[in-house]
Length: 353
Image (cartoon, rainbow, N blue to C red; front, side):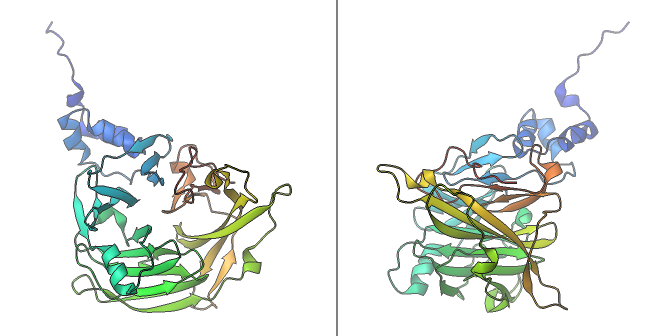
């Protein structure tokens, strides 16, 4: 009898490798599989797979993986600071004020304009340095030099600037707002929407990817949402709280949702206590934007997420709960996006059902 030839992992048929990858929704697990050997890394690129589950960006620059709950820290250059992410892309700011989007897995880099410089040129006043940057794109999975990018910039005094650009070309046609309320932006059905001053705006973008795009107008499509419509009594009856409202736009299963969250901190604070660690979500409400042409545009309160799980924070995401391992249907996982100076050891402490 001929001697039995030993088998090697690298000999695994690509079809079988694809079946294994299809059962690994975690991005970290897919990266580990590709690292086994060069053959697996090459064959993995040939597989047609659904997008992996996202990592949740936390304030300290780490990422929480779904569904395993592992904390990951991605290496960044010494001359850069982390300012957020879009799916697999990190938003970095270099010491010279330039911004870039970096894919830490493929090492691809897209150069962005100097957003802070544009901010100061537009303001023409010393309003303080921006501390919050949020980038959104129509499709974050296929970013390229022709991609359209919307940047929301804000300082600690809630001065807001909305910018449209294409990497690396800046567009100096910007719109600025001074707002006492939190705000958010999102692409929905290929259109850019902004929630500012409790109003929903449709941001009209002129031009296309071959011409420099610019904001041509901002049209209010849903008028001011009333505090009486969103408020409800605090669940706490034993403590006095100071409150702030936070608003998040989320595309979820073909719907544009507005999540209203009330964050409270006990008042007065105990001596020597860290107020950021005392904050917590007191209550929340969820509304759907009714944008049908035959109706008066309005917010409609919803009581079900249609089987979705919402991960709400600086960068919000909606996913079918069945794809998220231990995630619960119709559950909101609030990340702690308010403890800038003292990141919380439990980033999902505000998860609610």
